[in-house]
Length: 116
Image (cartoon, rainbow, N blue to C red; front, side, top):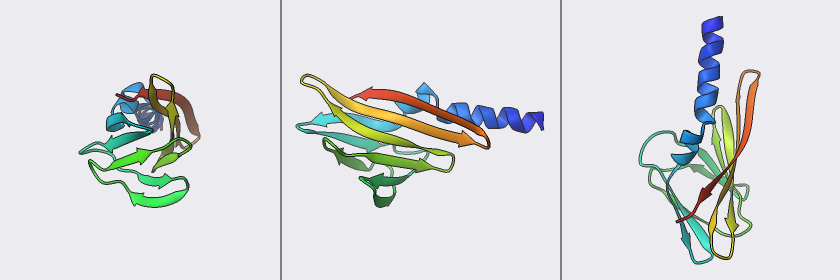
């Protein structure tokens, strides 16, 4: 039982770690008044929703454009990411809220990825 608990905690922490956030997208790039995000070419795939519209499962290297006011939700078996674009005068990026759970364990964190 202890081994199962340790394993579950390790998985939960791995999904919600800073390293995973930095590897969530292959590219995050500001293009005029939008942010283009490109998914990785391998690894975890997500059920995705853009502004509550179901877009199915993401494709590897798929690119989406996020405009002001958009909300992208990435859903995984053990949780989700809620992604919203943030636009400033000289910079832009993605505000990311992670929500992960494993049994009774729940982890909620906030992150920011700057657009290049």
